[in-house]
Length: 297
Image (cartoon, rainbow, N blue to C red):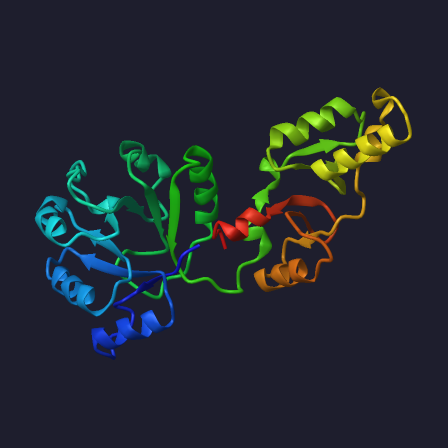
């Protein structure tokens, strides 16, 4: 995850002082919002003299073509256009350098990216483009997951403020996307197939009412197979119930992000995923460690 800091978020100081402060705090990128104003390139020229940090330029305009000559003269490392403001097709000349991205707000579906699949990334906005102080809409967590499934090789950026007010239920993988199997009429092949098809390395065990029973991970399967071989037993005799870990670490759906991170920190072993349950221990979903390192919270 990289930190892209907005250079216009502090209007009380000269731009040069803001840039120096951001550089001293070791941000990764300088985010530059441009609301249909070509004078932004005057600032870009100045910034290039002051520091060597990569520039992340977000342009909001109905007429992107008028920016192309300036971008050719003043290339940036990351270039994004806001899709809702475009009046026609966005055709960026190949000569313009840097990674290309498409920005969209919460109501805009990710299908808007279909016409720009040759771009490098998508930028999901928190609120109204060009305005600061907005709150990240929790609906974007679903949008992030959907985009990642559809375009696994594309990068996702989010412009937002992250706080401890988020609950686990806001960003977990929901129940209908969670690999799970019923302990009723338990079948070894079904358990293994659920883990395989779920592509998370784990599957949740529930009863017919979705009450959480435990989980079966790839590690549990490996250990069970090794024990069978160690005891000289036939692998075909392996009982599916013996695979289930009935005492895994869980997280409540109403736990905060801070509580989640504290639980992971205090765990005696590496945590790759956590079952999410409610107060009645009904399974509600799953949190994967990738949710954290891929900046979904």
